[in-house]
Amino acid sequence: MMNEDLDYSILWKYFNDSLTSSEEKELNDWLEADKQHLHYFNRLKEKNRQNPIKESSAKNSDLAWKNIQLTTKPQKNHFWKIGIAASILLLVAAYFGYNALYERANKKISAEFIQIDPGSKKATLVLNSGEILELESEKDTLIKEAEVIIKNSNSELNYKANETEEVAKSVKKIKYNTLIVPRGGEYDLILSDGTEVKINSESTLRFPVVFEKGQRNVELIGEAFFDVKTDSLRPFIVTSAEHVVKVYGTSFNVKSYENDKYVATTLVQGKVTVATNNKNTAEQTLLPGYQSIYKKESAKFEQQKVDIKQFTAWKDGRFYFREMPLAEITEVLGRWYNVEFKFKNKDAQKLTFTGNLKRYENIQTILNQLGKTNEITFYAYDQIIYVD
Image (cartoon, rainbow, N blue to C red):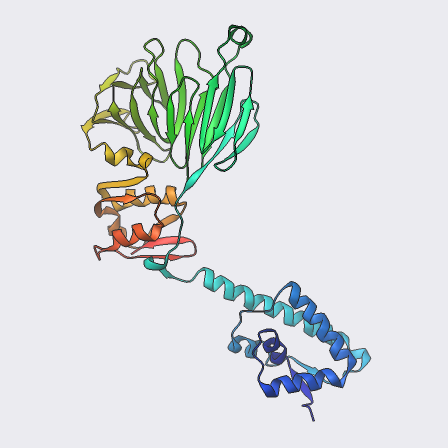
């Protein structure tokens, strides 16, 4: 003989495959007692198939169903109560299921278990017409225009100028393209003059599809490494806000993010001059192995001899930190791994580190190396990495 009422926790446990033998018998007796029970149960199974009622503890189910019961032989004029009860069941199931998933997604994770993959080759190309193309490393793209052929292959965007006399006469206005590299990305670019550019995460480069005769001008926000094709008649000019770098053929790195207080130009080979777009500012010459620091607030330049690897290793797939404050390191890691860092321990921002690490490792490896000092710990919560 079945109980007078059916506890809804039995239905919950049925969908979580956790019925005891006695509960299973009670459910079967209830289903056999009335065809309307079976009809209702089948509808509930279909809803569960579309939106599974899972992931809640027995404690939560007991609490949810403690006072929700169904009479074994409801009269027809009370059958609407079954629908209400079913709605309550699904709402509470959704609530507990969502919270269980939310709690797992936001569970505190220590450094050794943080799994965040490194960045990859990805970028967005905006054509002069306004057309937007998402560049994919696995997919080749070919664009033919009057003055240039643009080919995207093997994570490299290559501009090859069509320099025939007919084209030169027909082209009257310079067309610009913009390459946007997001957080967690990087991309390679060959300009129409043969200059090679490696563009780092969260950076934008605006450039002509073909260069005019007088100068080769590009505009940068973010960070890029330039290996400029030598042309003694046409200086290559990189403008970043009010900062200007002028070269004729050389290799150098420019770091100029919008939220940085400075623009850093690091020269590897050749010779460059740095200045501002203010005509009253004198140009300063930079020699290999030196770095120019332009302070935005004071509009002043400083020069210092540096270890070039510290500022160019990123293009070769490495992180090279040399007595670098942790606050700066986390900015670099945040851009590459597309993750946010927050300091619970403010003093940790000033700690300095030296290391040469692989850029394409899971972030877990990097954090473990930084944490070996035992002065700091890392943990992740709610998609944010905390430093304590």
